[in-house]
Image (tube, rainbow, N blue to C red):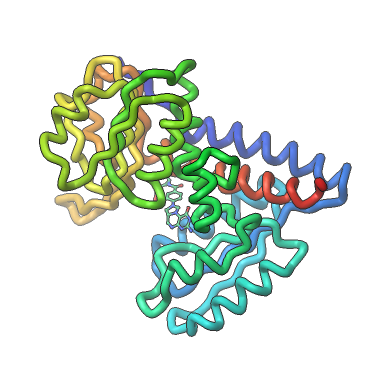
Length: 287
Ligand SMILES: Nc1nc(=O)c2c([nH]1)NC[C@@H]1CN(c3ccc(C(=O)N[C@@H](CCC(=O)O)C(=O)O)cc3)C=[N+]21
């Protein structure tokens, strides 16, 4: 039977470690870690995620500053708010929840965030640092994937990793993190030919296509480790809905280890946001 990697439990460990470090930062340096969370509009999923981030931040001793803006907020107003957060010494991390309404250019918004406060790791400076392996803030979901993998893999060197999905938020950065650990990395996507055959060669599979049930049991080599990043709400015949990942979980008994959905990558994303905020807060009190 495949090991089920408990993302919720690991996220709780990370959150507790952040809480301990945050308390020390307050006691020793008088720095209280602060996170600005900016939500534009009323996307129901975003409201839930933002609520979860603020609740976990509070548990870790991070002060959050919530900014809820109407869906028709002009881009210039959002940029002005970001400029104020950049200048605010109480704010160490800035998160602008995505997706943004269509009249706002996400690239302009991400460019406006001070790279030192970019706890999502989406600013071009941090993207560049990740690609050159020079220590910027790393996107939360990819960081969570690596921490989950580290619970079952000691030595990544030379392992074959196949990433499904090439987004800037997950696919590309997780591929870079695996490459940094000296995996042999193949990045695939929806137009990749013979995808099942490519996945069959993998020791590590990171499924981040957003396509529920895409990865079937016979795509996965016995003993492989499968990280399921997909979180899709799908309707059930009885009218209710449930969350599904990108992997057909019931077909993965022969895998070495798999992450569940929910309770896998999702909670780790939030915990890594807290860890990044603490890192950003710490950096301001040195040098
Ligand atoms: N700037 C920005 N940064 C983000 O990190 C970001 C974002 N925008 N926009 C949306 C996505 C999505 N995201 C999730 C966070 C937690 C769970 C999570 O905790 N999921 C639980 C519950 C799932 C459920 O019940 O809905 C789980 O998988 O167990 C999921 C998804 C962060 N995102």
